[in-house]
Image 1 (spheres, rainbow, N blue to C red):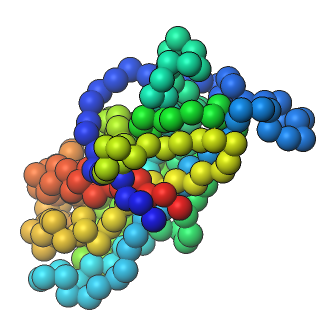
Image 2: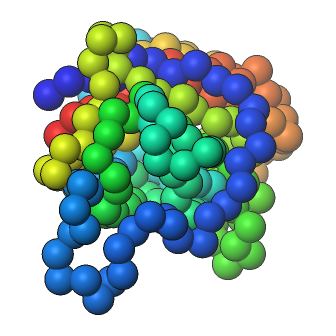
Length: 232
């Protein structure tokens, strides 16, 4: 299993595509010539560990919202835009069990230089993520906590080895966006979180209701440092 390098970040305006424009019809029994298949999934790596430093942390749900996913070809032989955009949003609970498949598509053969995905705030008023891009819930030393953030970032991912590329050649490739929650919890000291308003829930967010704004930013940066893309 190959591990992709950590991401560089930028804010890029991306247009949403209703469908992957080069996909063959759903009615096609076989793939078109010179095409392969790409499956993209997401998961969270988490093994509960008691007494993490001064913390006893248990996680319950980890919700994220991806606005879209984009694949960029190394060579401009597909079209003038030289990329493929996949419609979102993809709103998922990464602690619900096994990895969750986001897309399963036919794409042209070629060398794909990078995969990008974009965090964005959920626009679904019926969702727990409404107005948020990420939310993590659980307990710290037996007290309920919720971390959430509304950051918007595009994540660009390529191989750790710059000589390696995602190559589609009439075959099926599977990649997994992996959130390493154990590494995240190892970077931040949750024992500093406070229930400033005394409502019984420790809230860690950019709104700073409980006085944990700095910790919210630290957790966000820890996530950025510990999201990998894996070959499956």
